[in-house]
Image (cartoon, one colour):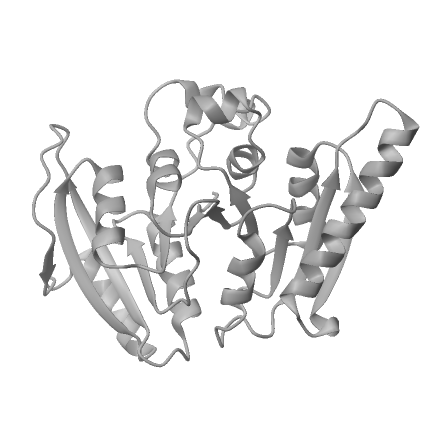
Length: 283
């Protein structure tokens, strides 16, 4: 399910550390990795030459730190707008997963600061793993999925089960949130799911693959509750489905639709205490 990974590096953040952690997982060990660094355009030839040299060093350092089998890793150094180039290269190599660092900016800050990760997430339909600068990347053993009846959540469940295969003692944490727009949070409860519920079906899928699953419920504002559960349950990785609500005509107008209303994925990517894998299904 994840055979080609695009790692976008900038010389900052924990993206490389995240990939090294993923590569310890049996399901990911054979995946091919493309390491990308994008050199922004410069006003003078001398500045451009300096940026190319700096970019080459960033790529070399990233590949050295990853310490991967040379047959599994390749590198690309390209000039252009980083936001556009990441999307282009992801399409060129048909990436199954994009890994990027994130400064954890809120939506409006992301728009005003021209955030690369925010832009790529909005325009790419590919699963995207965001690693904030201020979190600690841990060995992945406990994977949490926010579950509902959406196709995007089911897609995340399949990704989580793929990742957990072959991990001794690995746990799938299934979280179902009842929305309470008043913001009143309930206790986090571990439950035995009702037969035929979305949680019960997810547990059945996990059992087929020999993955231990535990189910938790709470109520409150969904974004806040998902982040709270991830922290209380000590999740190493959080998967969140993000249905694509943008009409096709709006896809070239990045961020305009995000200025109105609240986005669950925006809230979680900014506030979660662990790396977040955002995935959507596209009709």
